[in-house]
Length: 416
Image 1 (cartoon, rainbow, N blue to C red):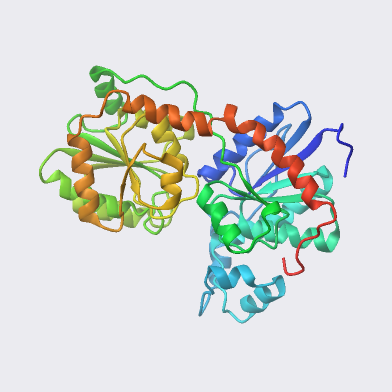
Image 2: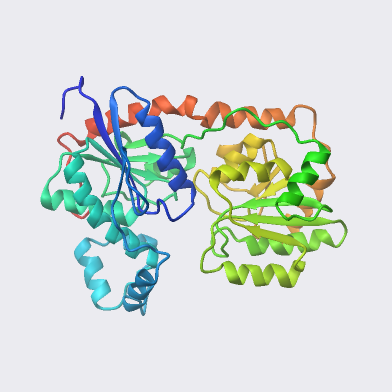
């Protein structure tokens, strides 16, 4: 352990930068900027693609969005797929045996993580960090194995954004983003000294003013959105399996039978995007929806013209879309589960997103509702007071020291 008076060297790892836009990719970049502003911290962003810079290095990976990763995934593809709990409990030898017997389905994302971990390990040996912060599960497990086999004094912090269920034999410290995720780990028997509750930080800035009607029409026209109809906005990867936008499509179709509604879905395209577009076209018509991918800094422009926000996913960690929509003051409808209530408290309407009729009814109610005075400002203030970087930033400095402390004399479990 280095002297307390020496700067702490912190590596933030993210296999998806700069070719994937998700909450964790955005957070990783912002975290390095936040750490760089601390006088006693030297950060390094280790990413899977894009150019290197003074505080960022590319650890070349077989990207999930490229043909090589897909071909390898098919070559390693499977007769059976162990569930999440089974895979978490397998050792590296167990994983290798399962793959050799063609009993382990390896996704393109996992191909990316494994190849990224190999390159990242080289970067870490050069940088010699005190702490490594990572969120990709397979990459984190691989780095724990490299550290055990080849040596390294750095502490591993698993930033559990998904969230991934316990156990966590591959991490010295686990950062949980919500109270329910922390509770789950403690109830499962994870050592409390190795669990930390610390949300993502967000650069929320000054609350945006309401746009005048003329400005809203102009903004809609610039984005290619028809001028008629209320806007229901959903932000998230354009897929079916997680964000479940097709469920929202069906609910909007039900609402549009009685009033004009336009659905806007914004997010990164994935393998399921084409199927989602076909579904939306069949149910809403080509003029009934807009599907787009915008840069993270442009998302705020969508919130400014939205009449309501809805996200149909039934599982989330600390959803960036939740926090950003609330910070923009947009009326919100989300799935009713512990994490959403922990994040948004009374700043959203909660519904069982597995029921299209229930969601359609809630969408109609929000569109016809006149909010109480101050409801918008209350929603904005609540998330800024809990998740803005100015509030959570000091917690990351404490996280670094905590990680160093728990690492000393406490090697990872042998099965990591």
